[in-house]
Image 1 (tube, rainbow, N blue to C red):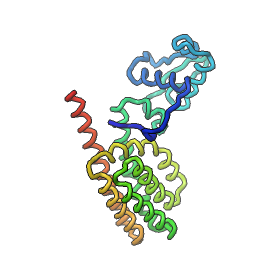
Image 2: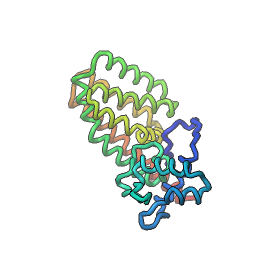
Image 3: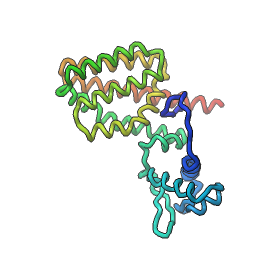
Image 4: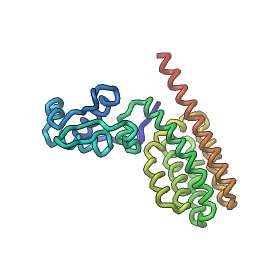
Length: 247
């Protein structure tokens, strides 16, 4: 399963602390850390041949992602996996594909809970300027159906425009924070045959319901779109698994 959340043409320059943090995260995920005790600053410095400053920055990165806690006496413990910051683009990049697949399914659960209601809320608050922007985005989608990478950026902006129209800052930040996983999900579903043509039709139905000031219609159209995405994601995941078994 393809899972990058940056453009495939992006040049990734990773600092040494980030590289070491990525290595340790993968070790933790693979079960290579016993008894929940993570390497200390001194352990990291010795194992990787880096300075204590680099080791300290490595632990700060892991702590910022809620992967470890640095307790009193500099003892470093691994936090429960359920508490890790799965909205971080770094963490998503470091995780194995099967875990990313699980996260994408959980993302769709979140979207199914929030986005139909956001679309219904947007019906009451969308301005003429919002409607013009949504129409412009749909026109761009039509033009970009042969360019999945460019399409996904416009797709994301369409959903964020609806979220902004709903005028709820907390929901806006939740949606924005999940954008990296959303991009990873779109990279998967956009690869299906005729997926972008179908997605444009779905987005058009959502837009038309908002223009008609039909909250029930907007809610239903968004739910249909997300259901279609979820089915595509499951189908692409199964194709990936079948291909892996044939190797």
